Amino acid sequence: MKKAKFIVTLVIAASIPLFYSCGDNFLDKPAQGALNNVQLGTRAGVDALLTGAYAALDGSRQDNQNFSGSNSWEAAPDNWVYGSVAGGDAHKGSNGADQPAIDGIAKFITDPSNGYLNSKWRTVYEGVSRANSVLVFLKVATDVTPDEAKSFEAQARFLRAHYYFELKKMFNNVPWIDENTIDYTKPTPESFNVPNTEDIWPKIEADFLYAYQNLPETQSQVGRVNKWAAGAYLAKAYLYQKKYTEAKPVFDDVITNGVTSNGLKYGLTDNYEDNFNPAVENNKESVFAIQQVANDGTNTIGNANNGGMLNFPYNSPFRCCGFYQPSQDLVNSFRTNATGLPFLDNYNGNAVKSDMGIKSDQAFTPDEGSLDPRLDWTVGRRGIPYLDWGLHPGANWVRDQSYGGPYAPKKNVYWQATQDKYADQHTWAPGTAINILVIRFADVLLMAAEVEAQLGNLDKAQTYVNQVRARAANPASFVYQYKSNSAPMTGFSTTPAANYNVSQYPAGNFATNGQAYALKAIYFERKLELAMEGHRFFDLVRWGIAETTLNAYLTYESTVTSDLTGGKFTAPQDEYYPIPQRQIDLQTVNGTSTLTQNEGYR
Image (cartoon, rainbow, N blue to C red; front, side, top):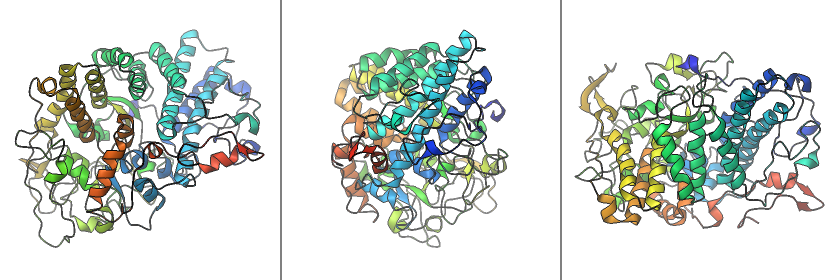
């Protein structure tokens, strides 16, 4: 399926400046290899600019840096720092001296000077600028048909809405800059000084709605967005604003009629792990994915998940770097009771056995209790197959257990058998061809379940949740033991690697127990299904339970590791990240900045 991708390797150097969020004198720097306005004002020029707008999705240049000029992981589009580490899915990992800026984010003691926040801001606004550039030159292109113009505009507005959605959920108060805000052909530094006091949700909605109404159902290139991706994202935007009545018909349409850009009817894959395997990517579960490719001829990993290059087991076949270690709290969440259902309220009271403090040359038997099999496609734990790389050896693959815990990430890791094709070793840490799933169909079902529950349709909500749980219960989604545990491994047996037991909620369960229970079950299902995919922090905030949940997490997890000691979440301050101080300074004239800092950080 790789050949069908829309490979976004092109970086446009246009005569208009690319918006680096109002800073660092970029307006004074000449464009290198610039195209002139006449060239850009053509169908070919607009399409090239649109390719550049897609290329910004992964925040990568070909030199393995993000568009902010900082380290690629600081603005990784999967939000592993801002969504998963901050949300309690994972520890930063590695050791305390490495990337200490993440510690402040994990403990909610960060401040506006944290360089990670500036990197994220600048990188996402680069995408905004590129989308705006498409719209600017589309207006003057004379060789574009009306249908082509509609498609170009819809794609550009979808991408712009995506970038602004990222900014909104991260920082809340951000300036809206579009193709009409300034003269992109003759900009001045002052023209970018736009206040961040306007609520941009209506404009995000308008862009997604236009895309939903004007994009085709399928595309000739699988990486281009279609009508149904726009519909799913529009409904998600409604959900974030608690507009459940508006969200429901859009989710209904997407679930009933939606297809992928390559024409596959939306559905759940039989195998849970297929969502994280590039050999079977762009499948029926892929709604909006950032396309990745390994060994693309650039001799870099710029298009190969370089934002996640740190996130492999330490001292392992992957070389680097020991970050992004799943938390014990997350692991415990996958415990199931005798009937195969989760412990919604007391999962940490039913902890999963770990090898914390046990050396790899010391005996250890993995937990033999009842578990949800999604655990072992999400978390690398000792004694369980780590994909096809052999049994995870425990402490030997962990940089500092006492600091980050005993576990390793798994969804971002390539398989040994196909590493020649899907791993990229062109720099000091690995890249991979695993697509970054911004929205997948299981996510859609669970968002729709939430909407139905909020509207009182509890049986419908349970149906959607049970679809997700039914896939988890499918033996095709189990991890199996090796036929031989002696090296070399000889493939998988028919014996599950652990005591897997997961079931659907019994008929009428949500209706009988009421709305509050149904929502609790839906929230928990999102934690399980989408673990380590960058959603958790933002979910907790929009549900209004971040303070309670994350302080309980910090208290519990601090009994396991040392890295979170002193952490405390305070609402409403910590529900959003501070506006980067660098951006406030850049927009300061005569002692007053155009940008207003978020509450609690002033």
